[in-house]
Amino acid sequence: MDAPPPDGLTRPPLRLFPTAGAAQVNQPIPFGTRGPADHAGTDLSDVMHQVAQGDKRAFSVLYDALAPLVFGIVVKVVRDRAQSEEVAQEVMIDLWRQAARYRSEAGAVTAWAATIAHRRAVDRVRSAQAAADREHAQAAREHTTAFDEVTEQVETRLESEQVRRCLRGLTELQRQAVTLAYYRGLTYREVAEALRTPLPTIKTRMRDGLIRLRDCMGVTT
Amino acid sequence: MKHHATDAHTLVAAYALGALDDAERKDFDAHLRACEACRQEAAEFQATTARLAAAVAQPPPAAAKAQVMAAIDEVRQLPPRIPAPSAAPVLGGILRRRAVPLALAASVAAAALGGVAIRQTQNGQDLEQQARQAQQQLDAVSAVLAAPDARTVHGKTANGALTTVVSSEQQNKAAFTAANLPAPGSGKTYQLWLDHDGTMRPAGLIDHDGTVLLTGNPADAGAVGLTLEPAGGSPQPTTDPLLLMTLPA
Image (tube, rainbow over all chains, first blue to last red):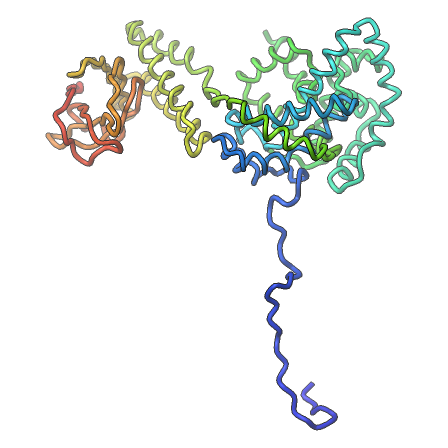
């Protein structure tokens, strides 16, 4: 190690070069750059406080964090893209309107936003369905054939890899009950009809299916 | 009743999945307000379904953001919800059971809830904390009113407000209620005092009708006083008392 250089000339001692301006390798990624996958929602809850006080800059941050989550679930339920864009915008405006009603002890910001988005999407689908009530049961039956496609359409990002794995861990009936309700916007009565399964069984499968998903995903509140 | 409770419980999952119709959802929301265990389970299930939503996340069209940002300029934000919808009947029930005159019951309950409501509409630094504090205060006030040794004194301030102090020696707490309290004026507040053998100790601020819990040690105090002070309060009274109510020994 300390052997003299082969040419016998002395050299300046080794030293570290200053790395100012260069990216450090092991820099931790700050919170808030993980996008909608940051379901812990710790940082977003602070943003929500500012939004609740009418802070538009904070809302811009909130929009970037939540819009993909909101748009994604709305498209999933509503299907029609133009309508989905409209509903998703209504949801984002609603998040602004209702910001002061968010309570962090009742859950993460993402869960709050997903609930509002899903509800709006379902309202849109059901009011359209109400107009075509006669075809309703038939439409619900068609959903069953579409259900396999539901789980297959699930995207392949890190977050959804886990969701996909957890969905695979459900029984067939649990998975159908959960996905028809959540990704298709069916009521549990419609799910029961579509799957030709008694109502109490569907309620129970939704419940034990969600319990299994919850435990598989390690969800805590 | 039992059947209904069991039935409601099996609906938690359907609720979190958005699989109830409108009427059922409203019923279930009402059920949730009364069922702490269901709220906990619903929160966990909603966190779970939020993961189902996150799994299908996709970016909205880029133009949407500008439209939303422009739209919110015209949208009024809602005030926070009053955190204790169940507080009024509870408070009323306690007061009636204790056979406190109905007028007092009504005024204390209304004032307590009014106070909470007013505090809730302020867009303060930490609404959530305010909500918690309001709830805690309401709980503490209820506890004083329900205490077996609660004593009540009525008074009237020099500027015409009707006041009531309910104190409990066991709990070493006292609640003060004011009705028809004139606005203190800008830069001013009403301040409560506890009289300890002629020494006035600060016992809290009140600037509108409502109920507050006195801070300090009411068990050792002989009287409750009220003065008008600069906003933020003073260490000692700087004006003549508007009220001095002798506490029951």
